[in-house]
View 1 (cartoon, helix red, strand yellow):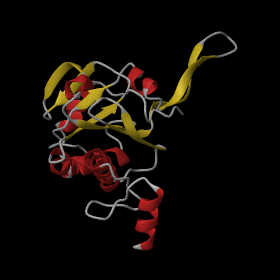
View 2 (cartoon, rainbow, N blue to C red):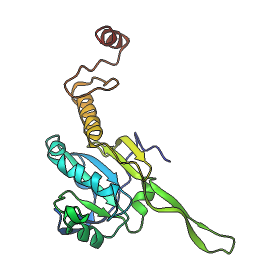
View 3 (cartoon, rainbow, N blue to C red):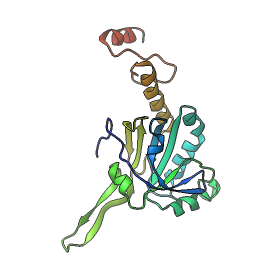
View 4 (cartoon, rainbow, N blue to C red):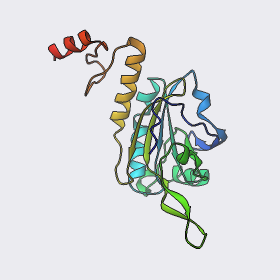
Length: 210
């Protein structure tokens, strides 16, 4: 598993469904450069079980991301037609109707591969035939990307393990606090709590008061 933190986020262009109903060809994260932070997350498959709970959880907190000037973007290996069908399906039927942030179609699996979250790989067997070893879908990867396109945080869960949207927001707050104030964020830091200067004196003062 590659560690992308501190590196430029892999670029891509792919078809996405935006606003729950519109197809946008050549969707790219480049549109956010210099303007927004990005939370990019992957899920394994549409029309499954854990996946809609995560996607709907991000939608429920979308206003909290937007007020922090953060774009939320989702990716799976399904086609944009499948995304659209899922978006058109009511929640009580297992759908994600009402989701408005972009859902990217990674049918070639190249985006998942470049972010190193594909849960398997192509190989050749003894007969020289190509086969896929593992699961041909993405792990539950999440990447926090800054306005310069640099990955500042990544989290990758195995397929059965759903993510915590509050933790994604906490990491956004921590990064933005550091960017704005130059203070580093200690363990379990949350917005509104004390941070500290990255000096011996700063650490000592923080520990003495906590």
